[in-house]
Length: 551
Image (cartoon, rainbow, N blue to C red; front, top):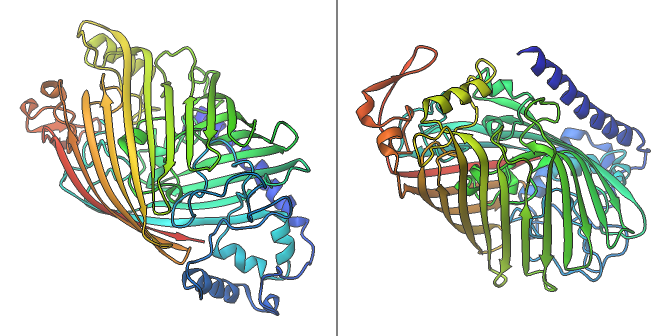
């Protein structure tokens, strides 16, 4: 761990601890209020572990089906439907079984709706000696543990040096035919009451993640050495740490978020319970993940919201000198009177547009549509680009890439170069576009199905390392046991439709050497090891599943 990484870790740690102090101050103010009103009489006299066991029994095996929604806390005032500001449409979906009730809006709590979440752990606390004060404080602690597994037609191990092989370009379950701990997550948060319109409010979140999925959440210069230098399979990432400020008298409500948060748009999210399926689309895999900055969300009317953001760039620390840069973003959200349709176009970052650490310029639009009480669909499309991207197939361009992201700081995980149309070019504009559609069916309160159709065009090969077009199809199923356990099996099929540079890079799937079969029987790694050179495949099938145990 070099000195710069140590300093950045210290700065990031101070940010997390500052928010942690807020949580402690909030909890320290709790009075001996007795248990929450909804708890059985005398519950405060029982031990914590006994209360937790009883809480899990009620969450996993509720007396009355369907299980109560985990996001069903009711605000104190100004509500028609519980948890909904008067004059706004009821949520179009139910959570659970879907990962949302109101369609996703990034970078803010959803103004006008109750956003407070908790599960069995907080119910055990609420039924303790200071339970009502805990509940009134709106401070919550929760999280989940998510193991996952896959069986794949790909057999080669993932090569961290090339970033290829195994199930790649599929992400998250990138190592084939294995079992892993994807995520163990712990949240500390206070959610502002953004249903009411009478007073300002505030909130915070600290989200801590451990598991293999840290590979897809870390920001450069925020503990990124775990992957880029140490090549760790499992790692830790403070995925979110932010403050929220809510001002109800600015138009119909304003939320100001300051800190590190998940990238504004997208149907999907890195955090397992926020995703419809276990695996992620190719569209989502290759767009921005997190930002460090400030985002303002203003509700102009029941139909219209605007978002303005300034950040240090995509997946980059604000302290990363030479790579950070001020990056504005702007979005518009339009929701119909019924709430059945939501349109969400966004320019998710526009700066000098030059090649850098994931410095993609991201023009994206999302559309959610409720068909009826059983069916709805989510559609997203984007176009991304970077200018002056070095050509990885040109010797001079490859040398520039190595100089910009040198070892040992970037032993692995550095951005890829482009594969320009003219091999004599040292630089070109890299670009990609993609579209994904989720067709979703709710059978009952505990069982849902989804069919994902995903098209990804890596027109210059910069996002995947393989120039060409990809098609991914996924059939996913989710079963809830109460509201504390999710089981999500799926069948995923993929094909590399076009591969114009296959004679140079080989085919995309099961290709750890990033070479065609004609390059030789094996490839040599920087650490002196060797891998069998498969030359890759154009097709991949994967049966995968995860379980999410909420607490």
